[in-house]
Image 1 (cartoon, helix red, strand yellow):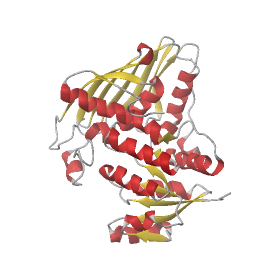
Image 2 (image 1 turned 30 degrees about the horizontal axis):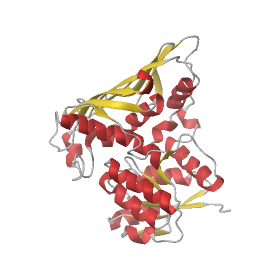
Image 3 (image 1 turned 120 degrees about the vertical axis):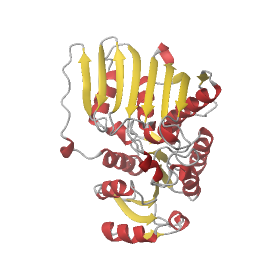
Image 4 (image 1 turned 180 degrees about the vertical axis):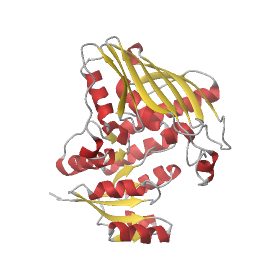
Length: 344
């Protein structure tokens, strides 16, 4: 049995350091390679993290026999292309969110992963937030009673300077706007808590930015068992991020998780139960660390981990996102077909 998993990261932008610092803390994981078209950045991270191999051409990283898992941290529009290349080369893949910008590409990724007998994972680290885990546990144990409604609210600030800072930000072909770039984490959590949505009615708009992808979306979802959900997501909040939250209403209680990183209870009103005390964030592994720890457990020790976002699980939030776009475009209610999406 292998004692270590060797990881290689493609894309050394803003999110790279979070991945590299997480891998350093996992005893059975080793960061052995990185790839980026920016040669100066490669020299910088090679020295900072003592990475043995760096490549300007990502193909060289993918073809390295030393690497077990390829981590995709490139711009969103390249996620599918790079993931497919790595899977076809026989590598496991961890892909940053969103795993693709459309359902068709995500289905290809899942198909190739199955054909190659490789594992495909997506980064949705907010599932590891202690507050989110407490909420999920309360729902699963029936502590909130019959679930009636759920809501996600994302009122974030992204000034025009943010979108102007990188030529792919705010584009449909590479970014996907507020739905796929910023709020996809919250969309994932809503469906994780409430189950499969069967229909979506939505509107999207560009309210306050010179970009081509929506900076705002409103949606109403109907889930199985007649549960209703709604979303208000925008990057148009003035001055700073105002709110990023998920609220679940049951007939025995209401819980709202908010804070800067979905890490505090804004509301905990549950019949007969005191609000749980959350761990001091300094005393537990970061969400990304826990994700990597679970990947190691899954691949090295064959342990099934409920929080891991597999390729099939990642398709679920992407289906909702695509339905939001389609509903807005056609001005109709969109009914979600899980069989057609080949979700298993």
